[in-house]
Image 1: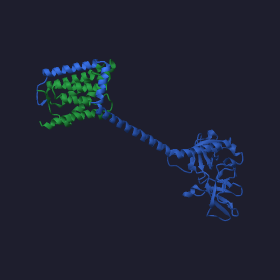
Image 2: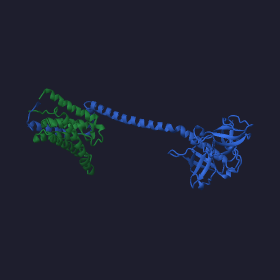
Image 3: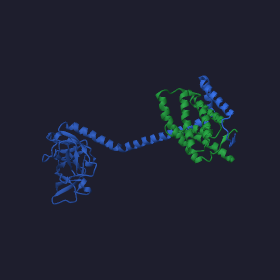
Image 4: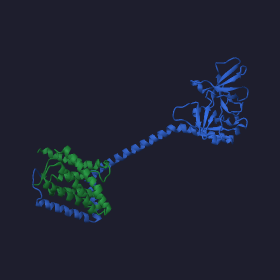
Length: 284
Length: 165
């Protein structure tokens, strides 16, 4: 071949063209038994490096897709693992509620805590049971660990619960052995102390040891007798006159509950509920 | 014309062959991805005489047939015809024009697909029409665009003409 020639379509070109055409038609008409060995020979010689290149490219492409899939699966697993402790905790709490429900038998209404997704009053929360379910104002709200609060307002399908941290919360209380009586109220109106309770009105001559379980006494008929409120942490600093005040570590933190039981009047009439919470309550 | 220009020309053709077996699988649907192997054949045939063009087309076609034994010979026939026709067309128009080259790339791809479809006999009726009017047209357009891009970028390396005269 030379460069820069201008003549096209010579007789030789036509002969070559016709020859190639004839070979092509022949290739189309040969039997399969001839095609296969010929194709195989081409694939194993001329095409081998190119097919290897194509295979490598495909492998690279599928490997990339595989890595992306594995990465996505790992991310999903990590996300699921993040929620695992919370799910376990909720599972344990639900099992506890089931146990409490079995022991209560009747006279309670189970409800889900409707936590707000926006900042709101942390001292009250909404539950998914209302007047339609038999809930009334001042019904006690409990979890397997103890008292969460009391119902402060009732709608048709929902209720507002004032937790024990609410400034207006008061409960007649006593030591679990009945040796000491007093009134349990929130420790403070602001700051970290808001999440503690205090047992007020204990006679000066009565000493309550640390870790003593404090339960509701049922005085006044609002909160049934025997519901755990917390355990004694120590004596308060602001003792006045002839009475003592004790700091109480609450039995349950309102932020940790996802499901509660609202005790209606029917159960309240049963008397002492202390045994129902015995398994979950801390011993002194 | 320097002697090294001819090597550059073959270098570009080899590059197109490598692209066909490496990058093409990543360019989306197999039916519409640019056919770099045919582009290499057309790059050669529009610069060569019809005889060598037919032979080149036949060789590339028979190699492609080895990869699709079910329609053995169809690619050889199609590439032979396209090689000869493109070389002849370039002789008739005889213009080193980007648009003309683009049209040859488009027409070459489409005619190749038409001949392969008819000769292999695998498609008939509506599927054949859809293949030719839809997928084949899209592939021809993309192949032509790829060819024009190669000419724009490496046109100087490809400005050689091979004949047997």
